[in-house]
Image (cartoon, rainbow, N blue to C red; front, top):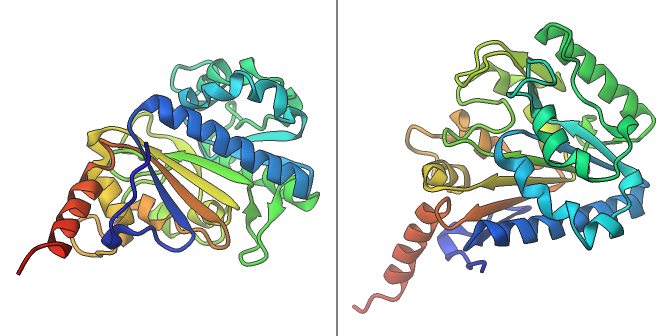
Length: 281
């Protein structure tokens, strides 16, 4: 079950931290969370524009492929995007599209015309340019909303998973892509994790979303989680170098979905804070 955070780790403004005992609990809660965001978006805008990422995230969408969601969600209003993609063919094992198609899209009735994958026949630079053009066209007709604060696309939900180094999408620590302000989509050719060529949403686009969810599981994520949500700006994982910490919604809300292992550094420090608050003098 979820555990309340101690005072020293209260979530930042417009953010929430959810900690779970097991991956099954995350699956259940994440499905309900996505369902609620979808329902609200369809009711308010007539569309639900969601951006996914790769890695383990797709497997956590499995509950949406089952009852009740498979019947109750208005799948005809869903529009699928990717916050990042590897510059490989769509049938390549490293393709985020392939992972999503096999693990999710093939199991739900989302119209193929509503699935906006990245051009895998272009160079990584041209693929990034093409994807930004497509998004700009959809913003013009408001299939994707627009942020009044930033003029960036305002996706209804961006789902991210965080790496043990604190990267999100294909934004890696200390990379120059973190500094981009005007581009919506960019590309990198020097990813520290293979494959090296990728395209990715920029931070302004991620932070302009109505809702952002970050999933992190495993003890190898504990230090990065701590650095991302801590109020401290000291140490090697300072705010300027940790992409997950730089996810700060402009007008939306951020929700962290953590298992106990990923939250272990938070919980240990929370226990210390609790003990200090209750120490007898």
